[in-house]
Image (cartoon, rainbow, N blue to C red):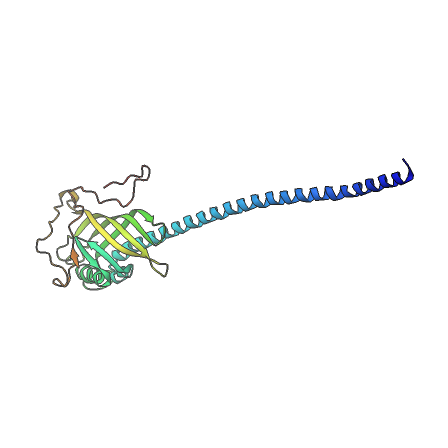
Length: 272
């Protein structure tokens, strides 16, 4: 190899060797880029999974808060009823809420006031709003099963009521037509609505008397009264309901079941 050939060979070899670091650097850069893409993709998946989990937890927490608020609302109803605080009871209802009691349907605030602040106040509290000396009227609220709708704007609940009531010996007379002391059991199948202010209120209070009985004889001897044939509604009867509906489940000794609003928790089947 002559001098010129050696110079050409060394020149080409040097150029090739100079390219080696550049090639290695490019390969390393491609590897780092691929690793970053893999890492970024994996991090994105984990982040999305965490976000989804947090959304689910937030929804579950919100539903639990709703259930607790509805339970508190229903229990407050029982406590106010205990003490004949009928104006406070009316304030627990939605403006367009209704009460279904004794076969009657009382609609809106006017109907609610007619029943609680009118009929009940007159019968149980001598026209006053508040406790009556020597008169017991406890409404225990028990066994609540509450189901909140997916949009968290409405809810349904089944609640048992157990009542012990009566007049003390110091009270000359119990309310007209009311036993001196009695037991009562009933079931609510209610609906509730959340207002624009985020506060839950009673939408429909649907109370079914299951049994009644005097303290002395017990419920076994109670004779449930048949509804009057000439029942009148408001305004023909100033104290009457807005409408009379067919009686639902009959009181003891009948044993008809108040329909469950919820499906069986294990089988998912409805029962009616």
